[in-house]
Image (tube, each protein chain N blue to C red):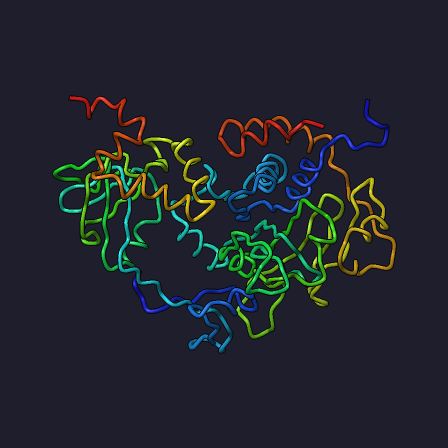
Length: 176
Length: 249
């Protein structure tokens, strides 16, 4: 959306409002002055999405319905990683949510880019890798070691897939 | 062999039946994610008395829109007739807490996911049924530690609806719109008033005898255990729970 603020009916009188400075109570300037919440817009510097398919102009077919358009509209810079890159993607052949190229700044080919999470209609979450993540998240030191192993010590996306994504090793596309 | 006066339904089934009775035909009724009991209640109502009810069960196939933006504005427009919500704590004033426990808000003893959505829907849905699977003094309190949504608002606040009932495995409370507080409405058999009083952390607001809740009927239970159970399993709507809990005493 990217508008300066949005009125919201509700939330008045909650402790949530006491603890946040991005939502205030304000009178309706057009009506009888009754109160609603006015929420400050979020303007993220960067938004990153992972989708089924994207083309080289930045048109994106998510492959399932998702609240991506509103986030892309609000963000200053939008990066889309995709399972598949094609030369030209028409809105009519998009599945699920379509994100037009005017909202997208960069596309990246990243098969299994949602790993260890799943991608709706493509692959399920990697439960064993998720369990590793959860176990590592219990302490800072374990989590730092986890990051070192799966992020910092990995040189490329291909290396990550080869080492950590069981389905990637089995997938015929990548076997020469 | 069950004792002779033991109910022929479990707590989950009782709550589902009581929730189903709150659903009106031709209205839009909804529940959030992680809400297997109201989900079953919505589906049961549609099988029984509300065939034209429009159901919204978030994160399932029963979701007549694509994005949560659409759900947000549907509620903001006032098109949501009924919403089911729960809280860790619920107080006499109809406030509920889904955020945190502890007297000091800066150092909570426990944090919960919280939620913006419920705090908005509590004001936008015409009727909100609050439910709680635990009827104890720690869950039903005089004053919640943190107000995630307020039971009532001053006249100068834009508000389309609010809480109308609280349902637990032991009793049903009605929200008194004039006094702006919950009052004990009926007690589920086989519980007695003393038991409700002992397990509720606020004044029940009653002095006259309190009626017994109408127990689930044979028809309600049979449709729940057959048609609704089948539908939940077939559509992947809390299928594991449906298989495990419905019809199992």
